[in-house]
Image (cartoon, rainbow, N blue to C red; front, top):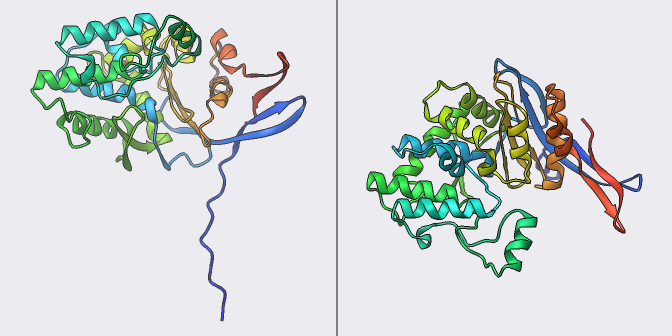
Length: 323
């Protein structure tokens, strides 16, 4: 009698980065990465770049374009904040509250959970001043405010705006598929409670490429232009996305939880990657290396790529890429 066959084990993703302490490799971060050339053709593929992943907050530009398609008229800082994973700094909180007041909405109507500022330095300052977890402080509060405002405009139910079958979420779902050039493989729930659409890394890079190449005045281009003009509202004053969009003319950049990143350059070149274990400490080095391969030369790239390891308060190692 023959032994039962074992299920095939998929190959492990390639190592993208190593954790090196005192000259000793103590850990490795595996993942997948894709680079597209200016024509949208895959130039480099590491790992399984056609398998679906949850892009997490890298989906936010598509979600912001969805509220524009629904008829909401946002521009400049407000539109950038609608696509943001903001740091929870004072100017972020102030604009969220201002937008809520402009549409006659209350903070309690936000479907995102209460949270502290995403930025570590801001979080310390916030807590020292007596701050507590609030919905407005949660990094997705701008997106949720825009979603509620769009529903209010269209007289759609506010209480169920996060239901995947809600009219607004159906518009966003279709927009993700249009931008990615592929069908959404799965729908989940993001950390903020909003529906989350799974697409491939190739699809994610293709989506960002479509935003920077879109015709002026289209929802996609309006979102890209607002994000690039006001990157501090997309992220914060001490964040890689902000540095990159400030220092590399025309770049569109957005990270997502679980170490996802997407970037498009104004000539149509684009990248997307995911670190398999979700370790955001590897995100900067991998992003900097990918940009270097693409020939992007700016002080921000070097700054983003630095990931020192300390021991006893001294630098004793680093996280370094191996591709």
